[in-house]
Image (tube, rainbow, N blue to C red):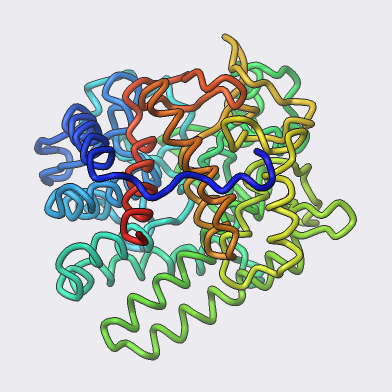
Length: 429
């Protein structure tokens, strides 16, 4: 990306309407509805991709609810209700719910199991911002009163179960819990010996036994794999802040204050303990001795999203997004720095994910981060490039940051976050 580029103007109504219709058709194609006899629940959600990913993934579903809030508020609410339907008594919500398990060979997924229908792992805790978007564009306080108690139980679970050292940062117990499953940040810690999907899975299975007959004990799991991940905790801090605002909307002052304090504690710990001034980068903390993991991944840019991000952090992230030798690709934002040894613009057969190609969801966050901190031109460049990716290659899972070619699943639902980008710009016009 080039300094001085001012970005595009606000979208014209015809452009916005055309995109809405494309997304509406995509979300109809990927809609999953039915009755699950295993839990006695009617479900209605948008899957990531009807061919490759027909089930309900946690953070995908949150993104889908945000997009649906622009199109069909009843379906947006159903997306949230379906996600919450199998919340466990302790507040846990699975990262995958296999509602219609018979559709696919679920053994092909790298997943630890809580039951035959629920994974035993989490994903980045972005539920609060999905609820906020649906409530703001829909029934407001009435919807909040319906779903906020469940959301609060979920964030209490994160706090009580995943922050045993009480430092404000939650731990992941499986690299898949980042949503950036095969990030090179975990290679050495996992003991990956061969940089192929099979090699990564072999290392993963040594760290995360996937036996549905053996429920995970968090204390035991932490001995095998435990990371205070940068991206997960940036989104955790952001969503606790959003949750505080939702409590405040309902006049729940004490709950709002508690969640804001948790958000502040997470943000303070992230900037104090994961930011390394020596290389001006963020690093996850691994194991009981909290050794720093390698950086230069897109996850290390996400702390710039936080409202209280230090000016030096925001400036450094903006610099990296603007540097053509770092993250400033023609079609941003690559999932690792272009200078990273693992960087590959195209995920050739047998290659691992999240090692080069750009993803729309991280673009969505980073555009918001730059706009939040007054870097409008940079935010618009990320948004414009994202919309060009979809225009050129369709709603693909990820994209070549140099050519814009799409890869992975076709008709990939979270890539429709470009609609939220365009809607926000229209609202600001």
